[in-house]
Every structure is written in C-alpha cells, then in structure tokens.
Length: 307
Image 1: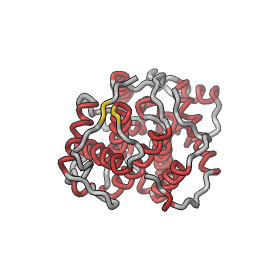
Image 2 (image 1 turned 180 degrees about the horizontal axis):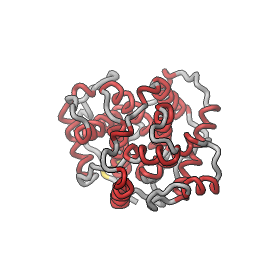
Image 3 (image 1 turned 60 degrees about the horizontal axis):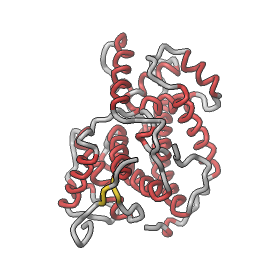
Image 4 (image 1 turned 90 degrees about the vertical axis):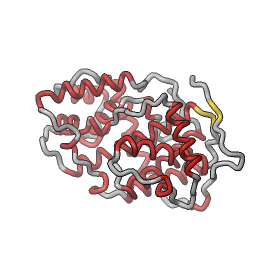
C-alpha cells in the first residue's frame, strides 16, 4: 500500500492545505470535538460484545482492506485535504455529527478513486465535496440543509450540477451508502482501555481529534473503522507503546477477536509520527499562495463547466 506517511516532505500546495486543516482542527475546542459516547450504544451491556462483532462483520463486507493498493498520489492528497478541510468547516457550521464527516470522506475517497477528474481544479473538488456531504447528511442528519445552503466560501453551483454529482456518487458506490465509522466503536474501546466507566471529556475529545488527524492522512477504505478507533484510543491513553506492549494492552481486555493487531499497530504508529510531525511543521504559511485497480470514468458537465 502506497500511502503518504507522516514525515514525508510536503509540497508548497500541500503545506498550505495542511495549514488550513490544522487551523480548522485548532479552532475546534474540547467541547466541539467531544461526543457523548454513551449514545453510541444504548442496549444491554451484556450484549455489547455481540453488537461490536456485528459491526465488525459489516466492516468486512464493505470493502475495507488494509492490504489493498489504494494510492494517495500528490494530486489525490491535495484534493482530499482541501475537501476534508471544507467538510470539517461545514460540519461545524451546521452542527453535523462526526459520523457524517466520516461518511462524506468515504464517499469522496471511493468516488475520486473510481472516476477521472482534474484533481487540481479546486472548483471541481468543491463540487464533489458538496455532493458527498449532502448525501452523508441525508443518511445521518435529522435536518438536512438545502443545496444552496452548502454553497459557502465564494463558490456556488447550480442545483442541477450538484444533483448530477450526487447521482454519479450513488452510481459509483452502487448505492451502498451505509458504512461503519470509528465513532460507533469509541465507547467500547475508551471504556475498556481506560478502565473507566465515565472517562474524562478530554480523553474522548482527544480521541476524536486523533481520528480526524488520521482521516487526513489515509485513504479511508484502506483501514477498518474499528482499527482506527482502537489505534486512536490507545495513542491518546499512551503514545509510547511498542508493538509488543500494544499487543499486551489489547490482550488485556476481553474484546471480540475481530481486530488484527498488525493493522492496529500500523495506524497507531502513524499517529505517533503525526504527533512528531505536528511539532516540526511550520505554521506561518502565506495562504494567498494556494493553487488551484478500478476503472476510471470521466466526469462530464454542461459545456460551460460546473456552475
């Protein structure tokens, strides 16, 4: 798998996008990134292992593959970072759940991996982003904004073109839109690994932020959501585990045996590198310098382009 890894040098365009992303993440305080994990599972505690196993079995049928060949080349990386930053900002504007953000980025990753599109064209990336979050909101949110309400940041698109992109996404994903996300697993892992029935808000908030940081870095179809949730929880509770001590930690709880320890350590190690990278990344970037195995299909719009 050829993913962009922490510590790899950033291009000027990547650096500007990364700066914007960090700005969005830093603007999110503890209250904004806190989620009530008690609401992720409201059933009988005695059946929670069975519930988690059902979720994990669903993951296995949804195409998440740590051994896949999902490549984040330079143009893909820049496009998805731009999309992710805008989707995070839109989530905050409308008060969406983080589950909606994750679904949006799954749709984005799968769609852009499957279709030919000019990833250097910011307007097209934004149009696809609008389509992705609009569909995700329809799946998850009680109140879904109208398409014109999504049009922020100086870019506007005709409803016809947004709906056309939505149909393209639905077709590409074969109308399979209901995916598991790491947030469904957080309650279980945070309580189990911290050994606290009521973990501190800071622990939950930092785990959410770790998931967001990892989302920036990887193609979401290349790692199971349960693996991401476990790795993010472990790195927040102890960011100096080795492969051996991580395995000991995982074996110390009676979790259902659906996790691959190597996959968890790979994500955990990447989060460790990201912590180190954040300490090295220069923060004063002139944002005015912003640049504009699956069969691919060319996106087509009206002759005057996305409008």
